[in-house]
Image (cartoon, helix red, strand yellow):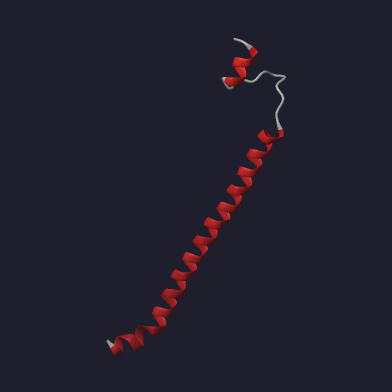
Length: 69
């Protein structure tokens, strides 16, 4: 196989150079994945906190609501 065709086929030779763009992509992807993970954790935290607060409020209002309805 010719040298030019091996590069197009995705094969790399041991002495192949790596460009700066190739190195930057995985690092940027890792940073974005990290931010996305924290966003998901924040949403889970807010959902759990809201559920806990709703249960507390319903527990406090149980007596007055029973008398009213």
